[in-house]
Every structure is written in structure tokens, then in C-alpha cells.
Amino acid sequence: MTHEDDRALTVALVAAREAGRPCALATIVSTKGSTPRKVGARMLVDPDTGLVGTVGGGCGEAEVIESAHRVIESGMPERVRVDLTEDFTSWSPAVCGGVMDVFVERVDPAVEVPAETTDEPAETTDEPGGGAADA
Image 1 (cartoon, rainbow, N blue to C red):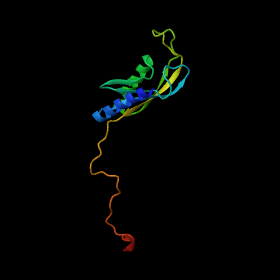
Image 2: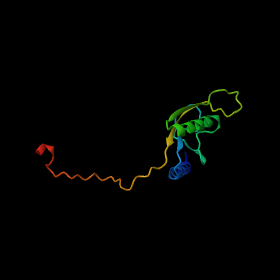
Image 3: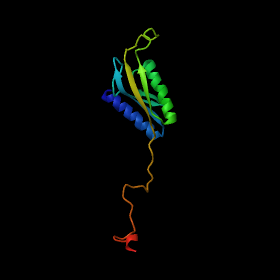
Image 4: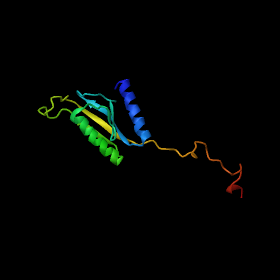
């Protein structure tokens, strides 16, 4: 992925989270042989606005998009094996000849933290040395 690809994906991800929309992030985690994209390539699937990025296009990407919609609904991540070695006689002459695994995970909307919640430790009312042991 290029710097611009990363930037576009990050902007879209932040926009979806701020708008309260769950979406799915697909990341290529392994490849073998010739594949259109390599490890680390990512695609964001936002049901309201569409796709940002790519994991290779074609039928393989369609499998990943279908998985992303399931993941958004269920919240359970999936690993999709895209096999680009199959059916060299298919309608698409763009078969690369490799295999890639794509991890698809749900990205939930931003969660509001209540104003009274802080990172400060709770104050105690016990005095030093006090407690049940002194009774």
C-alpha cells in the first residue's frame, strides 16, 4: 500500500467511526505464489459508503466483501482464503496463480466515554493503618 492508500483508508475509517457506523477491515496476512496484492494490503468495507482500498479486485475481492458483510453483522472475525490458482478456463483471464489469506475484522464505532470517568485512582476514605485488622 502506498502512503496515499493508507491515508485514504485512515480518513474513511475515522469518518465511519465518528458517524457511528460499524465497518470491516480486510488485511492480507499471507500470500503464496503470484497475487495481485501483497501482505499488508488493506481494504475498508463500509456498507453505507462503499470500499476504500483493495485486496486485489475480481472474484477474490468479492469473496472478501461477502465475508466483510457477515463480519459486520456477527462481530466475529473471519479468515478468507482466496485461491487464484483455480479454473484457468474461467471467464476471467486475470488468474494470477497464487493464494492469499485475508483477515477480516469488524471495526466498531467510536465509543463515548462518560464525563465522570477518569483515569485517576478512586479516592479512599480509609485512614492509613485503619481497617479490620485494627479492630
